[in-house]
Length: 194
Image (cartoon, rainbow, N blue to C red):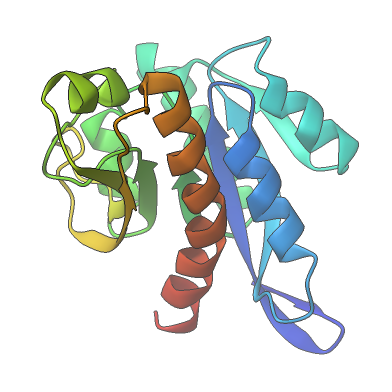
């Protein structure tokens, strides 16, 4: 935690694999007066992830580390998090399952956003599966991360209605819009009530 303008701010790390649209909304929210957090570091398991460019644009320390393959690299990540006094790890489109030793060392301090109404549609290709099963609603879920895929305690869910004209692409767009709204607010909620 660090002081910013006389107020305490929590340090968060954001883990990404792709374009970083949720990262961008988290960073933008952090610039508001009411935000109680600061995006301290961004870690990507993909070298060419667009989100790394967003981190650079905002002068946020960023790393490419595919640490899920190696315990040695995992320990490197843990050291980076400790050095930067990270209070919360936020997975935002991070497409790797975290190793259990990593989850253990940050137990209760890792959250993820998933593009479905969990426990339905864990894993990948959620929008295609939602469409092919004829669902009337879908949405997104912010949850704590445990060692089971998309199975941690649910913090918040938001629904979106599926129209007959919707396809996987249009649903992805709708869901992303609500992800961008709720994820920063959930981060604030968790950090404000530790």
